[in-house]
Amino acid sequence: MTTTACFIVVSKNDIPIYEAEVGSTVRQKQEQAHQHQFILHAALDLVQDLAWTTSAMFLRSVDRFNDLTVSVYVTAGHTRLMLLHDSRNEDGIKNFFQEVHELYVKTLLNPLYLIGSRITSAHFDTRVRALARKFL
View 1: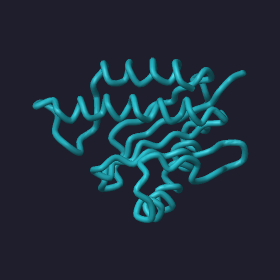
View 2: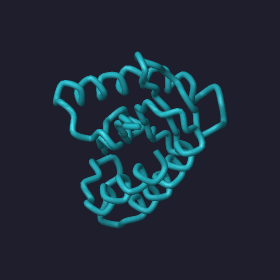
View 3: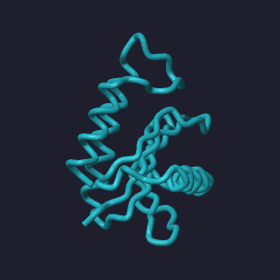
C-alpha cells in the first residue's frame, strides 16, 4: 500500500519552519505538493481553536479532505507538528509525533539555532524521513 504524507512544523507565530513530503509516494507533481500545503495551512484555524479546549498534546484527526486526514501534535510552546496522511495507523502516527517532538526539542537546545527560524539541518531532515518510514 502506498501512503501519502506531508509533514510540516509551524511555529507559534504561524510561520512554517520545516516542511517535508514523506511516505512511500514522495515523487509527486508540484501541484499536489502545493495542494497538500494548502490543506495543512487551512487546518491551522481548527488547530488553534482545539488547542485551547484540551490539555492533550496529540489532537488526532482535526480535518479531512477527500481521503486525506490532518493529524496534529501541539507542543507546550504552541508549536504545531502537522501531518497530512491517508493512513489509518493512529498509534504509529502518535509515536511518529512523539519522536519528532523529541528531535525538535534537541534542535531547540542547539545554541546555534535561532528559535523561530527555519530548520535547515540535514540531520533533522534525515531523521524525520527515517521516522516517517518507520512509523507511517
